[in-house]
Length: 341
Image (cartoon, rainbow, N blue to C red; front, side):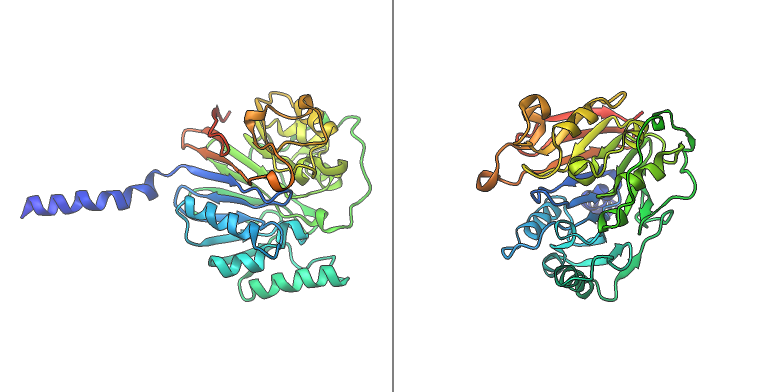
């Protein structure tokens, strides 16, 4: 009888172990110039940041669901909509029909729901999120087990107080120009810092230069990070990417969530390449209007083709409890490992 009980325990162990031994996962799904970042915590909970475009064929929603399935996820525990632009929120209604979404976090009402396109986009989101919405404010926590996720921006506001590890005078503020206040949905972006042990990941959506300066100067409220998703698809048109913030963060690795012709121009590449202590740049897409020298290495780029030839490969990061994190190009399975400082 004792041997039977022992055998039963052994059979049960495989089902029990994954929840205890998972690495943190961050998956950048290619939505071709939009955004759809899936995070799976060590406890197996899921956070999706944005949902891509709203194509008639449901391309982006299908790619997200496929990534969730590959990660062993059957529902989205929390969806963060950084802001209400079509490349970030368009896929939400279709996705909600394909996979359960438990909670919808956003910055509150869209400030662009004043014209037919903006109104239709926002109303479709509200219908999908009905009864499940949570309005985020800077300093709020996103309640997922095993990780700390703190909102650092929302609705045009940023943190009032520095986070742990931040608060020091920022030497990189000197001579960085201020830009006029942005009055689009980009400036309303929900941004957050995820901390898992020594590892820190920052995603600011499409947060604009003027709000970045509020986070960075005169004191850096965020401190340094291990991994940074370059804002606004790689500092699109210079609307994001203040050197005061980007240099102050001193990310070890930058992932650029760009499209073949969206974001990450030659000037943005040059700016990122100058980050103190930078170890690597990884790109979702080759920026086809830039030279080879103005893109990262091809083997660290998930998609090299443009248009119909683009196959929609992603990038995946796995983070171990000891702070080591591995970046994998899902096109060629090239992996490189870094250690959070």
